[in-house]
Image (cartoon, rainbow, N blue to C red):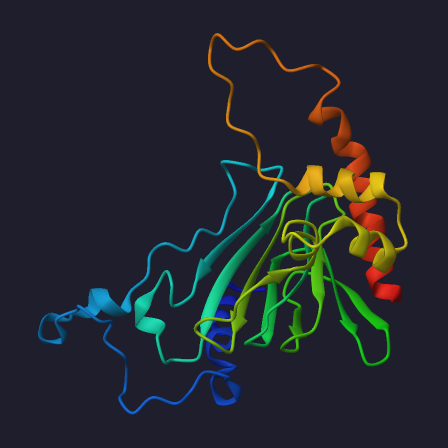
Length: 241
């Protein structure tokens, strides 16, 4: 695809959702954040330079760089936001929901597998996208992206809200304090499985002080492969509920 055509698609991607946005209408052309002197605004207010479209610092990981109202205040009231997603080989953007916006994803470096779940039919709609392909995730529907290849994959997403929100299913279920007994019965798994997932999803512990004894070799690191398999199985189970 020619560079000019790609730029055109990206521009269309950024405005595609404005007519169907979920943000409330505003009574002015744009919103000046509280504490900002509107009389001194210039082009810099409407400019954002913080979108990072690569993961050179962590090439083996999944990274996302956002431009929402939280990062780019000029988007307040504009019913649009943006994100750059970079997938290292074998990485996943786990099943999640955007409660306030639909998402239109454009792949700039494929292939990239995507999927969404229609909860009314308990049906998965999945597709392997190639460079230049687009895929829409309707508002509030569980969806994911997965790079099952050996090379990096990259995509851009536009949202129909300046604050689309993201609810990660694994984190919400296992890191929000839901009692283990509830999770065991709801997911039909044993206590050990729940504990393993909670352990794997927990934030990393602070680095030990220089004079602290080394951690046991059979500690958390040994659980990572097993917990990853459990998480994949958990995601599959969700699709079958």
